[in-house]
Every structure is written in C-alpha cells, then in structure tokens.
Length: 69
Image (cartoon, rainbow, N blue to C red; front, side, top):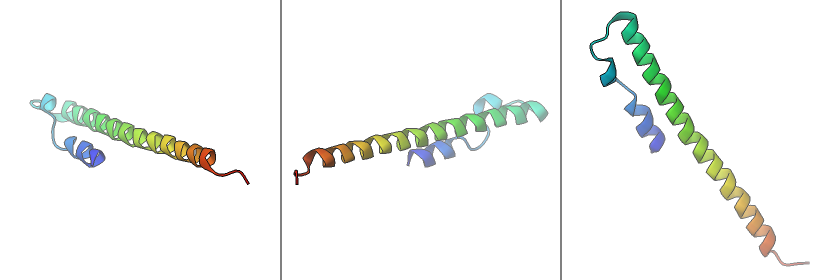
C-alpha cells in the first residue's frame, strides 16, 4: 500500500515547478520523479530487510525449540 501511495504521489507537476517552462520545467519534473523513485526504493528496501530479519528470527526460533534426538 505504501509503494502504491508513494508512486502515485509523484504524478503530475509539483507545486515547486509551477511557472517554469521549457528545459527548466522538464528538469524540475525529472528531479521530482527521481525523488519519488528513491522514496519507493527505500520503502521496498526496508520491507525486504524486515522480511529477512523476520525469516532469520524464525529459523533461530525453530532451531532453538526443536527436541534433541
């Protein structure tokens, strides 16, 4: 949900770019798109890191709670 919200928040012309024309407008919009991509990447990276940590914790718990043969 955060990824979708973050990706859609970057659509359109940012308020800081209003009044600009030509190359200045394109540069401003491209900078906004880059910022959106970085933000979405950070959310996905955080999600993956938490997933790995939870998986490792589960493996340690399973190994610690098994019965000795």
